[in-house]
Image (cartoon, one colour):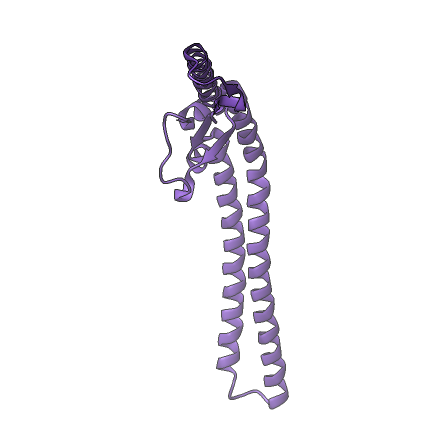
Length: 193
């Protein structure tokens, strides 16, 4: 006795049964091929679509960026002018100290030395604090620009149906498949104008 698909016993030498089994096998193969084709088509429809851009390029092209940079430079100039003034005061006091070094009694020398050391410590502290304040001011000045850029990226991403928008700065993505992704740098720049 022979066995066919699904272990159905076949009568010996039954030509009609063999033909039926061939037809059933052919139908199953065709159905399987149709399912594979459908699965590939469904997979192609699910493929991720994304955008990419140079974040720094877009950020620096924003009209508000130049204004923010100018105000930051003005603030830097003010801190630098104050640092220069304090440094000049210190240098003047130090020269006076050196000029009178031979004529001062030891107690006055110690007092002047401690004044100079205190002045130097204050200058160093001021320089560190001014750097910290400049960094803080720059972060605060950039925050509204970054929020506006994030909103523009969200709008472009939603309008174009992207799964995400990738920042290509810093050679993060040395190669991108242009069939799946789209460079949106210029689109976002136009939106932000």
